[in-house]
Length: 440
Ligand code: GLC
Image (cartoon, rainbow, N blue to C red; front, side, top):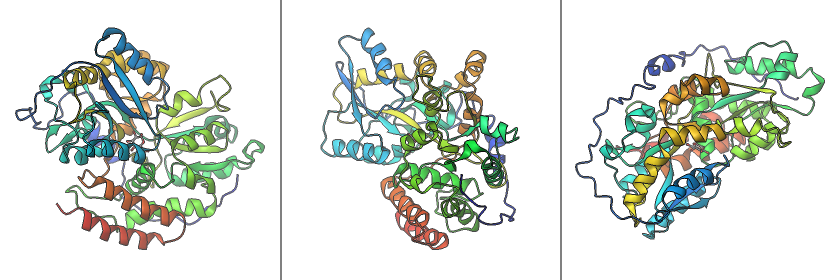
């Protein structure tokens, strides 16, 4: 393992941990406290028959099983999977092209939680009356918020997502470290200790996702939020040119410079990072919960099965802040069989289906009670840190021009990580750009 501590981290920051306390009451309340759209102006969702589901590449491996369960009980209203690329940017592009062509090829869209405003404002997806979604109050309130635009519902959360720190528990134990690190400093110190072990040869300290795509927006947002900064403030105004944001971005930039983050990680999306962790190349890895089940497979595909633990993301002065991820199922405005589409969405969001999914994969359910089910939490130890991650998570900017906003973030972050632009200049330029894009 090769890396050095790159700089002293002395500055005190406001503890980000308080967001956990603030949000701790939200889970499972079943009442999101918002006024809701009520659906008075919602269009009628009519038409029954075959439908399609457009969804990014199924890295969990269980989606078709879920669809088979629907198809078995709905022989005249079967759903066909239209599998889109793995990369969230490419999924978004295909969905938008389809909508702009007013094509009915996609009935239900597995819509990334960050696209709701853009898709709803452009009327690419239809409003869904809240009273037609019986389980809505059982879902984690923050996930339901992601599916709303101007207080109206445009999707139903089927999966949530929160970033997790995967770590090689076996090597930490061998190096005499009992607990997962809570701060970046602790993580780097743990790497230095483990580096002395023969097993650490060829390993790198840490990696998340740094390819120029949506995952970079996630990792950039997490670094900034975990240092006490924001991209946009509570009123939705850009405020990224701050010392806190700089500290967060520098953490990643210096990680690359010092070799704590391997050079190859500049090409990592979720799957490249997962494979590196599974091959034993990383001591710490930031990724989503779906990785837990795959990295624990004992069929020879993972070298780290049974050897790793899962913890909340580390931050500057305490636990870090995840970016809220996940997917809401929405109905394309151009779909034919919208009544079937709605029933299918309710089926996929049901407790029964989400429980079935958790038993096969480790994707994050949107159904709150599953995080507290004693049998499940015993069987799946990642559920506790995942619940904390999701409850403490920050949304990415909720804006109609999301495509442009995320492209600007990705460009700024990528240039900084590649040492083409200094972090403070990257943030100053990004602030100017975001101000021109976010005008409300
Ligand atoms: C995951 C998250 C999604 C995020 C994407 C980034 O799929 O659920 O919200 O945008 O990763 O790559």
